[in-house]
Length: 409
Ligand SMILES: Cc1ncc(COP(=O)(O)O)c(C=O)c1O
Image (cartoon, rainbow, N blue to C red; front, side, top):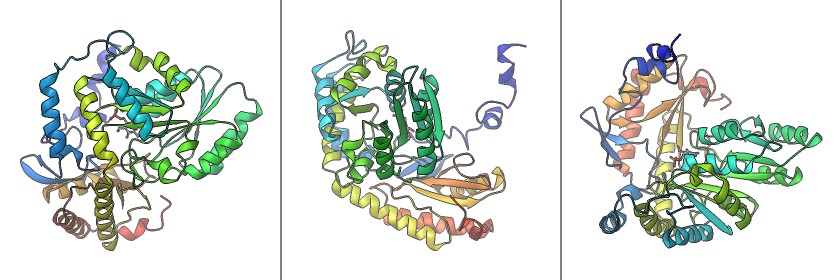
């Protein structure tokens, strides 16, 4: 048996698509410029699959500022890790501004959100500690959990009885600290973590709380400060995490927490200690972006108005769009097998609508979920064209939408 034998099979993640050298359902080749329009297979499509919540990817002021900054620095700047030669006063200033925005004592930058989650959680959780994680948490949190030397327990998605029963069991025979891990806005379904109850349980059982608010950061609350701030609970969050790859339309991530905790992470998060620091171009432009996000109440208002138009239009057609309070629009469609989902995607793309879909275990068996991300930049025309295309798909493919109306999503 050779190590590479598996590469000739259709095993592994998305193995069927890999075996077919697929560029349609996986790895579609798209126009690199993000926006509400994209080009796929030579066809102009309305883009609903990028997390460009505030439309900042097309923001002219940011683009002009980036062009100025790009002239100032080589791509390599600064070289080395923050610990050795890659630290600058600009990194420090940006961290201070982010600490202020997230209402925490201190903050630390990471090069990617994924690396930030991995580094933050794995640096804090030791052998005697336990992670209690929402089952539907993003891969970065699951990977961080598997990488941490402690124990872990997974609670049913947003189910407070399940969370409490795990916390109770742990406290019976507790040997170390406990970290509850959840997303703020769940990025696939668009529902919000039940933070009011999670915060109560965390206090009752003497645990700490990490929230990865990748999809809430810059998006939720009028101020853009995120999901905890939306609930008025920012002060109850022990470690607040955001990425710049979504509403901020850049690259990087940030953990914000009390100073002593951030200092610990700074010296112990291996994904940052042993990696080159965030490039200057991003650091400098992110300061500008942060200002725009802070003053972005009208963009957030427009994004939520667009989300409402899209959700109600699809609901009027009979589609189940769940009850998520974030802009993320999850469209649930009954599908006994993957083929129905593939047909829907093919038909929508033919009609000029670019979307992606997910199946079990993100959603219950027998259901396919399509995720649309309304942004501040989508126009009424684009929203109406999309609703029309969903009506065509419903009729052409004879979708029996009633069958999941009452399903427990
Ligand atoms: C909830 C969540 N956390 C973390 C990440 C990773 O962020 P990044 O793309 O900045 O590495 C993502 C990205 O998909 C995400 O959705």
